[in-house]
Length: 394
Image (tube, rainbow, N blue to C red; front, side, top):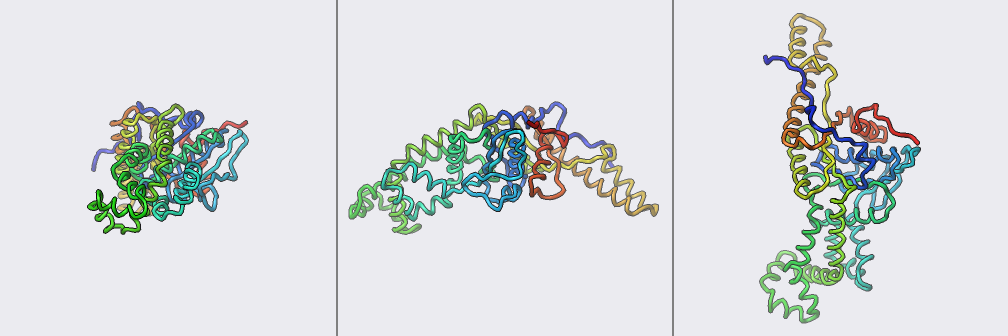
């Protein structure tokens, strides 16, 4: 049996602590990012609620297609329109709205607002547009940029909290301006524009003259009718290309501006912390303002001096001597929990060792799922430093 040791702290004393309340009080945009299944949506909701109850007018936007955010806030559903959350303590002057990104509706609103007169209807009824605006790869990330820009331009809220999609696609919206520009300036778009610009019977001549190999290959895959839909859609949308670029770049610049903060959310697990390291490094490459790391679902043990080895040894002695089975069972449960806490601490120390300057805050594992405002308040208090963290009133 190994020599008993006390449970090590999850983060070394030298690791800076993430001051959540200071971030909530000063940020105008707070982006929560991280891999799937680490409690990112709950963290975003808890942060938004705490900010609102500290006196800030707050809106939380979820891009995650899951509906946990609505459920935790007592709403039957979320959609593209911010909805007031009831039950929030507004005595400090704050408020809380919540919404979930609707890709198609956001795209429709952009078309109606920015298309040339007479072209909006042609775009909205185009079959290719209808498919693109609902499920095309990359559309969600770009529409997230658009919606964030819209919310900021309204000037209604002091703080916008963004809950990003799970997995590494959570940072894909950082690439949206470059990807959009590459697409709009690319050869594919020029090819697709040519038939529509030629028009009518000239369509076949254009295809035959310059693009027969390309269009024959594409037609076999998607069909001739779909190719025409794509060409007509791109032609109708052409006058909006500049606006797409400008707004995407404007939102990208906003994410780097003072007042924006990114929070990376992880669980004390090998894969989740590996993903967190990726996010931290990617944000550093993009020179995005990182506030710190939230480590969710951390297991803590009250009896710090009773290590897993000692608890297990005591349980075995009790069982061998015919002692209390209940006490032995409790000791075994404690041994499992203490061993888990040690494993989590060591994994977290690897992260902090590689990224010593990143501020960290831990949130204890909850007994069950968070599904109401009281649960979110408890998470928010833990984020801010414990249940004793008081909210200013008045």
